[in-house]
Amino acid sequence: MILRIEQWIAKTAEMFNWVSAAAVAAMMGLTCMDIILRLFRHPIPGTYEMVGFLGAVFAAFALGYTSVHRGHIAVDFVVQKLPARAQSFVDGINALVCAIFFGFLSHQCMVYAADLKSFGEVSMTLQMPIYPFVYGIAVGCCLLTLVLAVRFIKSIAVMMGQ
Image 1 (spheres, rainbow, N blue to C red):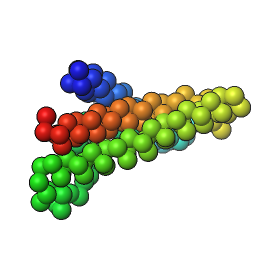
Image 2: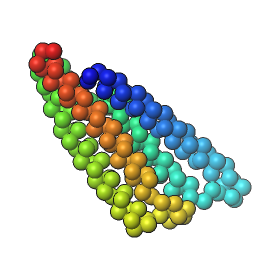
Image 3: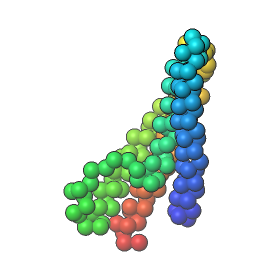
């Protein structure tokens, strides 16, 4: 069962990563177009805001995929010298602490997004609602929480010798 959940999370993380990649491409395209149009004295209004929003989408939606593929920077030269069960223990504790942190972060982003929505907060130039992007950050953090929770469960299985 845990394998099916892990596969579903990996597929979901990959879909989120494609959204993240599209956000990077949109940031590049928008920035390039703005630079070119500035040469003709017709900059794109709100470019700075849109690049900021797209950057939030990029960072949040790439979290789960990066964690599934263990693409984050890790300094584990000390842990590598430990026996397999001890390595699994350290990895499990790390996954648990990070899952708790990102679960809390996801919850707080949801609360913050709801506040932004209720107050009608919008961006300065484009007058675009901010809350959908904060919800996006919450969803990205939630996916990372699921990845880390599965990693914790798998490390417990390794420690128990299964």
